[in-house]
Amino acid sequence: MEISLFCITLVIIAIFLHLISLRFRIPFSINPIMAIFFIFMVVLVTGLILAYLLNKRYSFLPHGVWENLHVLIFYVSVVLTYIITYVALEDDSPSMTIARFVAQAKEKGGGYQEIRQILTNEALILPRFRTMVKNGWIENIDNKYHITAKGRFYNQLFALWIKLLNIYREG
Image 1 (cartoon, helix red, strand yellow):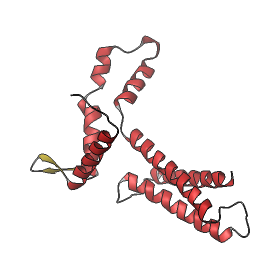
Image 2: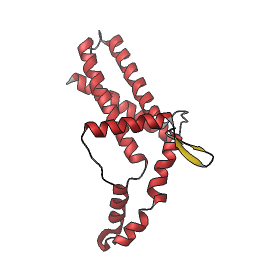
Image 3: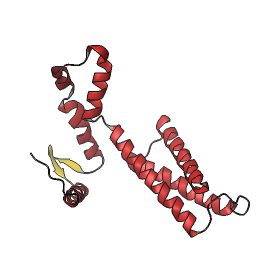
Image 4: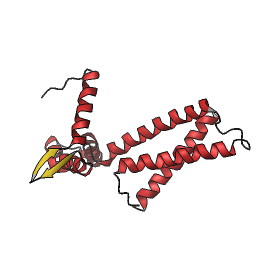
């Protein structure tokens, strides 16, 4: 229980620091995912160092290899979940766009044609496209887009993962 409370405290501190960095638009020369990872890892390392230094005074802090390993496993899994959630919320997904449209329509509801009008390439595809360019997955050379080595790596990684999960896509 003490390890859980310690981890939850570290996560709350890291999320708070991330929100502060977003609120004040602290510039990161790296992409937002790396910024989140950096903030969370600094908090983890700082927390573990403080736990080690203050361990003799406060017995509820983690000590020893196994307790620190528990902290690491719990914390890293929460960090990865946070990053996945952040990426999912960073750009509007088709499902969220439809849900927001229907919620705003309230009792009158939303017609199929109205939904088709809001689900355009401009609203859904282009933001993802710009993100891929910004993150270095694709690049513009002579007004033509080409995949980069980084993009090829992720494409192969995702294809392997889809194959391992035995997922078949049609179309």
